[in-house]
Image (tube, rainbow, N blue to C red; front, side):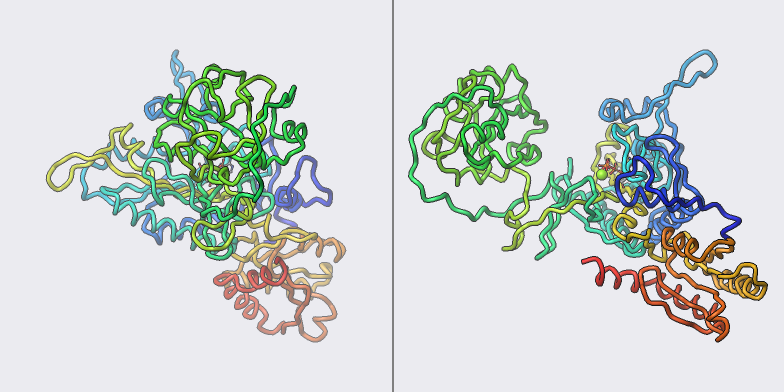
Amino acid sequence: MYWSRTFIPTMKETPEGAEIPSHILMLRAGLISQVMAGAYTYLPMGLRSLSKAAQIVREEMNRAGAVELVMPAMSPIALWDQTGRTEAFGDVLVKLDLPRGGRKVRVVLGPTHEEIITDLVSRQISSYRQMPITLYQIQNKFRNEERPRFGVLRTSEFLMKDAYSFDTDLESLGRSYDAMYEAYCRIFDRCGVEYLPVEAESGPIGGDASHEFMIPSGNGEDTVVHCPQCGYAANTEKAEIGERRQQAPDVEMARIEKVATPGAATIEQVSQFLKCRPADLIKTLLYEADGKPLAVLARGDHEANENKIRRMVGADRLELAAPGTIERVTGAPVGFAGPVGMAEKIPIYADADIQFVRNGVTGANEADAHLTGVNPGRDFELEAYADLRNATAGDPCPRCPSVLTIREAIEVGHVFKLGTKYSEALGARFADSKEQLHTIIMGCYGIGIARILAGLIETNHDAAGIIWSVPLAPYEVLLVPMKVKDEETMKIAQSLHDELEAAGVEVLVDDRDARAGVKFNDADLVGFPLRVVIGPRGLKEGKLEVKWRWDTETEMIDLDGAAKTLAGLIAEEKTTNARFRARDDNEKD
Ligand code: ATP
Ligand code: MG
C-alpha cells in the first residue's frame, strides 16, 4: 500500500476531550474518528489493527475447539423479559420500537448474547451426545453506557468476541472453562499485551468460577489486588485479605463518653471535629440480608465489601437498610448508628481489624452525638469477626506471608461459569443416556477487541506516539523513500514493496512529497514497528537504514536481499514479540 492512496489523517494537536494517552493517540494517529460520545469510526489504520486483533482471537478460539457463528444484533425483547434482564440491564439496554404493518415490534440491540444463543441451543440441542460444545462469534454489541469515555475503551457500540459453552455436568464445564482460559492467555501473549488474570466474583456456581483478564495500567477504571510475591490476583470485590497481624495498641481503655458532634456526619467531619484519625472511627453499616437487618462494623478508613458480607451470612440478597429500618433499629436519624445501645437487638458483625481498635469513636444512636472511648470486647457484643472489607495496599496476602499491592487495570476479557441461569429460564434441556432430562450447564467468555488495542497503546507509547507490537500494527514495515521525485529511489521503493508483499509482509510506502521531519514524525506517531529509510547516503553504498520503533539506534542493511532480511526480521518478531517485550523490560520499569 502507498500512503498517498490510503487515508491516514494524522494530527499534531491534542484533540479536545481526549484525556488519556490511548484515546489521544488513536485520534492523533488517524486510527479512529469520533461520531458522537461513545461512537467512533474506525479509519483504515484503526480497522487494520482491530481486524488483526479479531483474527488472533478467532484463530485461538478455533484452536481451543470453539466453533464460530454469528447472531444478529437485533433480537425480540421477549427473550430478555424471560431471563429478567430487560430489568437488570435497565437503561443500558438499547430498545427500539419497529413499526411492522400497523403494529409495533419491540426489539433489543444485544449488549451480549446469552439469551439468543441459549434460545438457539434449546431448539437445536436435545441430547448429551451433542455436547460439550462451545460456540462463539465476533460481533458488535450495544450498551447505552451512562458515561462513555476514554475513546474506544468504553463505547456504546463495540466489537466483542463472545463465546458460550454448553456442557452436561460441572466437570465437563470445568474443562470447557479451562480451554477458554488458556486460549485467552495465548491471545494476549500473541498480541503482546501484558495481562493479569484475576479472580472475580463467581455468582451462582461459587468457587473458582470467574476470572477477569486485566491489563495493568494507571488509567484503568478497575482496580486489581495483586501479590507480587506469590502472584495472587483478584478484583476488589473478590480479593481476600490474609490474617490481620497487627496488635491493639498498648493504651489503657478509657471510659465511654458521649460528645455532641453537631453537623458532623461524614467520617472526615467527625474525625476533624474530634481530632482523631479516620482509623479510630468505627463505622456502623446497617444492611438487610434477605430482608433481615444486621449491622457491620468497619474502620473509618476502610470500605465494607458487600459480597463478603453476603457470603458470610449466606444470604441471596444484601442491600443497605432502608432509612425507616435504620431509624427503627438505632432509634436515631440516619448517620448516627453505633454498636453500643441500639434500640433493637440485631446481629452485629465486625471486620477483623476492629479487634485492634482502642478507644474508638462510634455513633451514639442519637442525633448529633458520638461516643468516644468505645472498646470492642468490653462495650458491645459481636456475632463474629470476619474479613468484611475491601483490601488496601499493604494488607496481608491471603496466600503467602507477603503483602498486597493495588493496581489500576483495564478489563479486557472475562471468563465466567454461568451454571443454569439462562438454560433454566429459556428451557435448554438435554436427555442423558437413560433418557432423563437435565438442564444444560453453561459458561460465557467475552473479550473486548477494541480494549486490546487501547490497552496495548495505553501501556506502549512514548512522547512521539504509539508503539505497536508487530502482530497488531496496521502495517508491519514502513518504507520511507527520502526523495520521492527521484526515479531510482522510487523504483527501489516499489520493487521492495512488491517483494515484501509477495513474502507476506504488510508494507506501507510513505510516498508523500513531504519533508523528512514530517514523515518521521508521522511514522513514530502511527507507530509502525519497522521503519526502513531509502535515502541517498545509504544508496550510495548499496544500503538501507532500518530502525525498530522502540529503538533509538538505526542499523544499515544491504539493499541486495533486503526484502529477505526484512521479511526474516518481521517473521521472527511476529511469532515471539521478543524485541517488543525486551523493550518493555528495559524501558518501562
Ligand atoms: P465493564 O465492567 O468495563 O463495564 P463488563 O464487565 O460489563 O465491562 P462484560 O459484560 O464482561 O463487560 O463484557 C466482556 C468484555 O467486553 C469486557 O471484558 C470488555 O473487554 C468489553 N467491554 C464491555 N463493555 C464495553 C464497552 N462499553 N466498550 C468497549 N468494550 C467493552
Ligand atoms: Mg466483565
